[in-house]
Length: 301
Ligand code: SIN
Image (cartoon, rainbow, N blue to C red; front, top):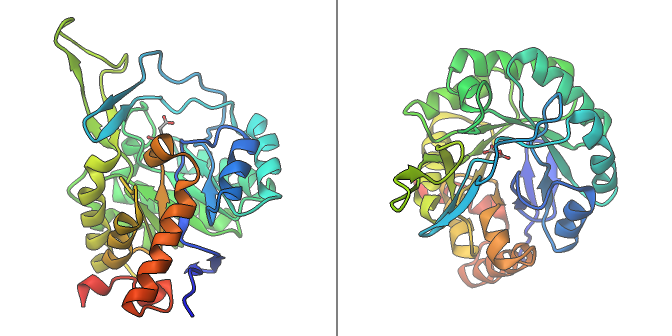
């Protein structure tokens, strides 16, 4: 018998596939749809203290093997987003993604997410295109530790930190999450990128710089999970360019206990969660693995 159940700290999910923040998670009903399509959990849109229109158009484009976005963290603010959370938490595991500029911001946001019924909070310490947020707070290990510590002291639900690959000190930042009492690390967010339209001799995105996601970044994500597995003992959730079951297995074998899918939902629809899980199940039967934990980090042995 094979089982797709996986544990991320104290949380147990029926399968290791999770919707990544930023795709199909603006509304409660879209998160419900993804849960109904077989995701073990979903992560909400990243939400801040106040409503934010995000960056002007153009803020998204497709490139070879991926997409570049500079959405700029558009969201209705934590109070307005509560209604969406409440719809989704009735139907499954919802992780509340939050962004802020200081430990105090993150504490207020995490308390609200807990009150809405989130099963965990994911601290967005990694958005590469929002002034004052994301990587601007998430690449300083001292700041990361103090944010994680403050949120841990304020809420009872698990605290996950989503980290950036746009740094050469990722293991050090991972260690700061662990030292701050963080329950899990999510790696990676998008990579800083620019696309230029030669006809206009200008960058295409209104913000100029965006974040690259999709198949192009998978080997970078797998390497990040590999490095983090060597640096920390808390669970890791892998994300970046997962399209099929083989991609997901790479992340698991590098050290991830669960994985998130984002960009592939745009190409394959929310059914991708079921397809990837079926593929993993078939692989496990064929190669004699009985549980996800049997495979976590095996590539290091
Ligand atoms: C966005 O919604 O602006 C993207 C979030 C991120 O890159 O973390």
